[in-house]
Length: 118
Image (cartoon, rainbow, N blue to C red; front, side):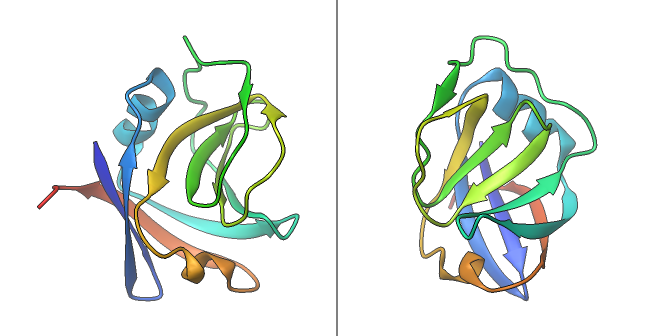
C-alpha cells in the first residue's frame, strides 16, 4: 500500500506496512489533517477513528520518516527525528525520501491519499 502526503504543494511518498493498523489507516484515506509539532520530534494529528492494533507489538523505537499510530491517544504521529522505544506506538509505514518539509515550525496542513507505485 503506497500513499502520498501533500504539504504546501510538495509531495512525500510513503509505503505502508502490512498490518491491521495500517490497513485501517489506508481505509480512512483520503484525509486532510492539521499536523501539530510535538516534542520537537514528530508531527501529530487526531484521526477520525481509532485503528486496530490486533497483532501489533507492545511498542516500537521510531526512526526519522516513520509514520506511526499512538494507540493510547488514538493519534497519527509522523517522526522527523528518531526517538526512544515507546509503548503503544505502532508503525504504519515509512516515508521514502527527504522529510525536511516536516521539520518546519508550527502546524502544517497535510493531505494524505492512496498512491499508485510507478
